[in-house]
View 1 (tube, one colour):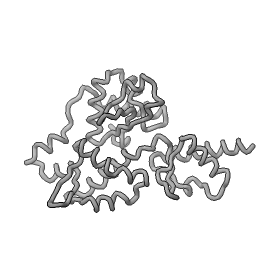
View 2 (tube, one colour):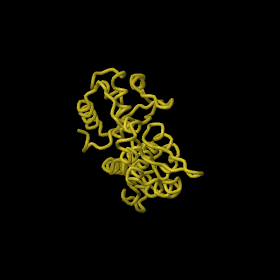
View 3 (tube, rainbow, N blue to C red):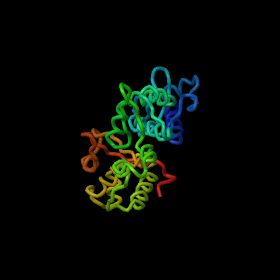
View 4 (tube, rainbow, N blue to C red):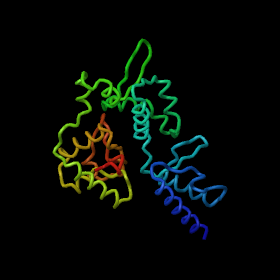
Length: 251
C-alpha cells in the first residue's frame, strides 16, 4: 500500500513538472509541504534521474531531466540581457549582477562558458577599453552601424541552405507533439525529413547561430549507433538533440 501511494505521488509530481516545462517548479509549486510520502517520492525521482534540481544549497527548482540544460539556459539568459540593452555596453561585473538575478544555481556556474560559446558562435562581441572588458550583443552592433559595417552585417545574414524551413519546422513540431518533449533527437528529425545530414547539419547550425534553435548534448552513453550517427559536433563535443525556441513564431 505504501509503495502504491509513493508511485501515485511520483506520477503526480512528474505530471506537474511536465506541465511546467522548462520553467520548472519549487517545492511550494509541487505542493510538497511536510508530507513524508511526497518528499520520499521527490527523492526517489531525483535518484532515478527523472528530475533535476537546478538550484542546490538548500534551494529548489525542479525540472524534468530533458530540461537539465544549464549551458543552453545560460546562453539564452545572456542573449536576453544583452539584446535588451540596446546601445548599452555591459562590464563583466554588471553582466554578473544581471545574470545572477533569476538564474538557478547550476545556470550561474555556466556564465563563463556561455560567454565563450556565444563569442565563438558570432553572437556576442567582447570589447576592451583600457583595462576594462565590456560585452555587446551582435544584433546591437548591427543596429548601431547598419550601413557602414558590412562585416558585422554579413555575420548576421542567413546563408542559403537546401532545406525548406517550413518543412523542417513542421517535422519538428510533429515529433515534439508525439514525444511530449521539446528537445528531440536530431536522428528522428533526419528520419522524418528523409534527408542526409550533409544537408540538415548546416541548416541546424545556421538556425542555432540565428538564435532560433538550441543544440543540446543529450546522453551519448545511452544512445544507439543510429542516434549517434546524426550528432552535430561543436568544439569537439557531439550534440544529439535540437530544440526550436519559440513555437509561436516558428512559421
